Each structure stands twice: as C-alpha cells, then as structure tokens.
Amino acid sequence: MSELKNDRYLRALLKQPVDCTPVWMMRQAGRYLPEYRATRGVAGDFMSLCKNAELASEVTLQPLKRFPLDAAILFSDILTIPDAMGLGLYFEAGEGPKFSHPITCKADVERIGVPDPEGELQYVMNAVRQIRHDLQGEVPLIGFSGSPWTLATYMVEGGSSKAFTKIKKMMYAEPQTLHLLLDKLADSVVEYLNAQIKAGAQAIMVFDTWGGVLTPRDYNEFSLRYMHKIVDGLIRENDGRRVPVTLFTKNGGMWLEQIAATGCDAIGLDWTIDIRDAKRRVGDKVALQGNMDPSVLYAQPERIREEVASILDGFGDTGTGHVFNLGHGIHLDVPPENAGVFVDAVHELSKPYHK
Ligand code: CP3
Image 1 (cartoon, rainbow, N blue to C red):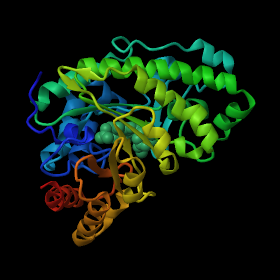
Image 2 (image 1 turned 45 degrees about the vertical axis):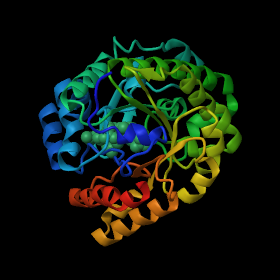
Image 3 (image 1 turned 60 degrees about the vertical axis):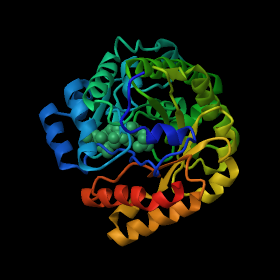
Image 4 (image 1 turned 60 degrees about the horizontal axis):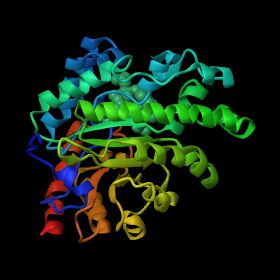
C-alpha cells in the first residue's frame, strides 16, 4: 500500500474521523489561474494539453502549489470517451465543446464501439501515471468520467445545449436507440474508470451535469440506472485501500435517496439544496460533498468566510462524512486569492467540529 501524507479526503468520504474538513474545488485547474493559461499556451490548445502527460500533470499540480487543497483531480475532460468513439471533439472559442460527427440515428449508435482505455485513451492513463508520480503521495488523486446521460447529451446535441431538444426527441420518439447508446457508454465508462484506478486514481467522481433536466421518471430510467451500473462495475479496492465513488447530479437534490441507494460512497451536491436537509435525508448512508455556490467567490473575504461557516454549521457536529467543495466548477474570472480565502476558511472554521 502506498503511503499518503494527507488522506483526509479519502477518510471523510468513508465517514472516518478527520482533524478538519477536507476541501477541493471542481475545475480547480483552469483558466482562472494565469499559470494555467501560460501552460495551455505552451501546449497550443486544450486537447493537446490533455494529451501531453507532463503538461497535464503540471496543470493538475498548479492549484495545489497555491492552496492547501486536500485532493488533486486528473486534468482531462469528460468528452474524451466520445472523442475516442470517433465523434471528432473540437473547441470553438467562446462556444464550448463541439462534435464534427454527432449521433443522429440508430445506425450511428450501432457503429460506435467501446474504446480501449489503454489504446485510444492511453493518453489519459499516461496522465494519471505521471500525476501520481509527481504528486509524491501528498494528497489523493481523483479520477473521473461523465455519466452516460451527460455524455449522450453532448453526443446527440453535437455540443453544449440549453433546451436539449435533440436528445429529448430521441428519448421520447426512439427510446431503444437512446438505451443502446447509454448502454455502450456505461460499458465504456466502467472500462475507462477501472483503467484509471489501475493507473493510480485513488477515488472516482462521476459528473452527471445534465441529469437535472430530466423528469423524475426519466432521471431514473435514462441517467441513474446507468450510473448504478457503473457503481456495480467499478473496482472498489486497490492497493490496499477502498476507492470511494462520488456521484454528482447537478440539480439532483430531489433524488438523493435514490442516488444513495446505488451503493456509491458519496453524493456531490450543488448549491440549490440546504446541506442540513441533505444530511438528514441520506447522511447515515453516504458522505456528502459540497455545496457552496461558486459565485460566492466573487465576494469579499468576510462574506466568503460567513458562507463557509454556514455550510459547516448546516452539516453539523458529526463533522466527518463531509468533503467541502463548490456546488459546480469555479468561474474563470474569480480572483485566485479568493479561492485561497475559501480553502483556508474551510480548514480553520471546521476544526471545532472534529474534536
Ligand atoms: O480541475 C478539474 O476539475 C479537472 C479538469 C476538468 C475539466 N473538465 C477541464 C476543462 C474536469 C473534471 C472537467 C469535466 C467536465 N467537462 C464536465 C463535468 C463537470 C461540469 O463542469 O459540469 C463537463 C460538462 C465538461 C465539458 C466541457 N469541457 C465544457 C462544458 C468545457 C468548457 C468550454 C469552455 O470553453 O468554457 C470544457 C473544456 C474544459 N475542460 C476546460 C477545462 C479547464 C476549458 C478549456 C480551456 O482551457 O479553454
């Protein structure tokens, strides 16, 4: 078993005692950091950065050099799987991700296969191995993937969407086609995440960014069912330690009981739910991660500290079982110092809860 100097993040996910509440930030490596923009400039573009193990490791570690974060997250993207399936991922300035060959019909779905994680996706595993080497056991490394539903939204819409008309049309007019796609994606995600674990990822997070646009019935049938399949297929112990799995459905606060029933170790919360209510509902089953509105980081230091204090109070005096985080990714125009105020506030203000 390889030694970890700081394992607070893993311990909190397993509801074991910690000295203070661990914290990391979604999208902690990214454009709000000038050093990230510089390294991306060296790589040329975002995907070239993901495909260069040394540079991907460098940007993964950048936020850890600035702030005493309790976890690192692999620098990559959820859209690596559809790209490896041949959809042709590209980024257009200011417009987000796009695919040159989106999924339009059943024949398109039948054509795609499950990518080989040590083949087309080997660059991701190389980044994991490089980051583990460079981290020197300081903090655990989180591996991740998108949920099948969230990946399918990008693949069918051809990029980002607001109304999700194309995928919802497929969902209601041709549900079997969508199920075939989601099934292939779930198999791909299981292989991809297990390869990340074998390469050195010590915890897993599944991002279901768009599950919250579904009705409760459709959420169960088209999103949660496939995340459940993933939880069932993952390696849960590696290198002598449990590999905790966190499921994050943005806008999924209504469905916490069902999410907890998948057998995941933790649920990621966005800011639209009071963590006090979330804990009352599922806190005996799973750990909770969250849930400060990332926009609070625009505030003055005192206001940031006040919000951290309020969330810590909401989670309450059992202390453990909470990983502090933002309810979604950090905004790209947040002053980096404010992220520092946030991270320090979590460590300092949480100590009294862990006596
Ligand atoms: O630090 C980290 O959290 C790790 C890296 C990470 C990225 N994307 C890097 C990235 C992670 C975990 C993701 C996940 C991701 N990617 C999600 C799920 C989480 C969420 O935010 O809801 C989604 C939906 C994507 C798809 C995606 N990739 C989008 C919507 C964008 C933004 C496009 C834009 O121009 O703003 C990306 C690109 C992307 N992924 C960037 C980064 C740092 C920006 C690329 C750049 O440098 O220009």
